[in-house]
Image (tube, rainbow, N blue to C red; front, side, top):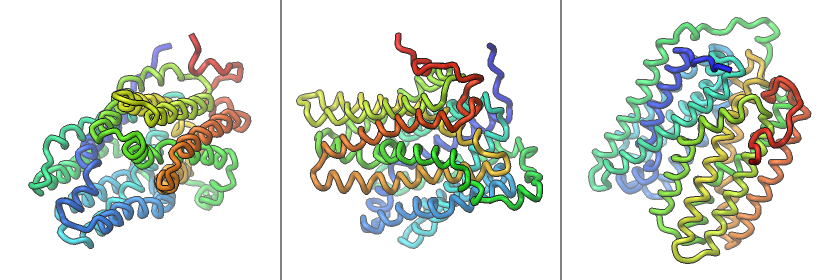
Length: 418
């Protein structure tokens, strides 16, 4: 079957997101270092400032989701990009701690609005059967942009030259402006949705009554806690403090993760098209559990093998991500009524934001208590539970929501064994 080409509107949306990802890659690894080592803020103060970024997002996401439903996701996305541009440019100019807190609060608002609005806008522009491909392309290019941006900025920034950091923050700000300008070409979707009186009266109470969606969010939350919530905190803490690998190896591991995603994403998306999305979620959990086992084995190995295990483990984690990208957001937007897509995407986004709070706490408690085996074993066990719960979602989803024309498919159809 020939695939329908992506519309020009969707291509502009994906291109703009890639530009902003390239800019984000310039700044993503350096925020704490910039505030502490370049601007001279105490490490604790810098840490609180970075934490504020996530806290503002966590608090404001529900409001942004409701706003997206009321005025349309296009307007919210453009507004979020303006906030992102202002907040990022402001970081280049901070000289006092309160400057950092203010600019990061603005940036947190922009980030909170952007992701749910973007997913809702894609759902409005793209029919259900094509959404997995768009989400997959977006995820692959997002990682490519961040990877390239991070590599380039690593060559540019210099701790002894504050101007180099100011440059990358201004470049990041301009990337958001470029994305907003590209969105002006699809202003025809900026009209606020016409809602019936019943739809106007609906809200988060209706979302809370959707038990199928809440079950999905429960699975997503557990998966995020054992997955993404640990990659930025538990993973570097374990491999540096327990496996004793160097920062260079950690950098290579993240490079391998990005390379796997970019190389495999579209191939994986084609393989799972038309097959049970719940089984794809199951395989995400299984692959991530295997990746933690590989990473955990680095503490038992010697010589060059710990480094090999760390790089291979995070690369394997990236392969699981290629299954997640076209699946999670697609299920959310197929479950969501059109007039509540902003709220549904906001709630699903909250599960990942919550994992960024819970994940580091769990990692700090277990690794701080010198229980690395419990840490790895707990993640593996939790992901095994998630695999079972993912399959259990099948009884609650319609065939269409689960990506099927019918129900006569078997377990091996997602990743056939050859």
